Image (cartoon, rainbow, N blue to C red):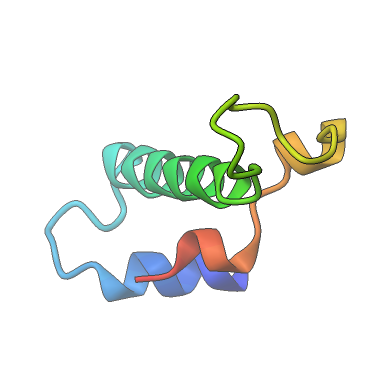
Length: 68
């Protein structure tokens, strides 16, 4: 939760304690997670990942997903 608290503190809007701000932060993190997972794809153009992703890989937000 330290990363989340930092992300909230870094936003300089009136919506800091607002549920909408929390949702926006999590949605941005999920988009970054998708890009991070996608970047591991092979360059074959087939769109198939090099290795199958585990359930944990697909459901875990990493610290890098919360970068600002």
